[in-house]
Length: 306
Image 1 (cartoon, rainbow, N blue to C red):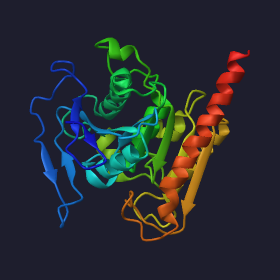
Image 2: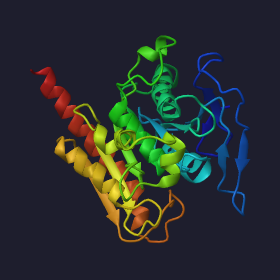
Image 3: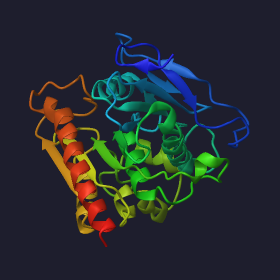
Image 4: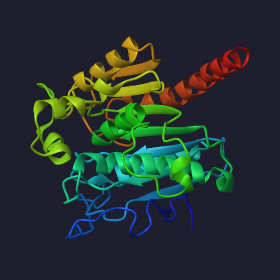
């Protein structure tokens, strides 16, 4: 059964066939953890990464890849996953939540593992376009916290192969049409780096490798337009992460819509927003997508006219 905004259990689309990816000698143990009320679940031990599918009742011809956070130690299932996807489905998107492999669980070339899953996820989603009835070009990516780092890395490194091609899907582009980052981790070096994310993603590496893993250091001409949300009192991921990425986008003349709120902390997602003004961010993103759609259409018309 396909998942939808009503809350039915989502279908799983697995990213890889058995044998496509090299597995560690001992597979991580799949575990679902929950908070005190059992509602804000998270997952670890993902050996076979998948997409959870949420189907809209009134499609808008667009799709969205949702990348939850979890400090690269877990993948948040509800707050930054299912709840976001259900809301996006209500807005008309075909929404897909990515449950990606965690780099610190024994995988070879650990730093490439999440990006490989994110690139493959974009291609798997585009491979569903004809069946589901959305435009394969219009796939938005949205990432939260460490998932924001993965989303920003996908947006900046989509053309760098993170895995060898396996089938026809790998001929499809991995570039997001648009990219949205919510309290994202961006840098892996300097005073604002998070040691837990740095260690789990990269392990013990030299400063050069930590610098290269910063998403702001990889912005290029083909990086898509961005939407960024961050609370300035975030005590876990400093707002400077978003500012670094915004500045890197602006230097490349890439459109970026940045929204900084004085209060909100970290991990607010869609449901945990104490400040009423912060609760506006989903609507702001919806308006941004509409404006970006028109802006990109103008660019396409201009390009077609030479």
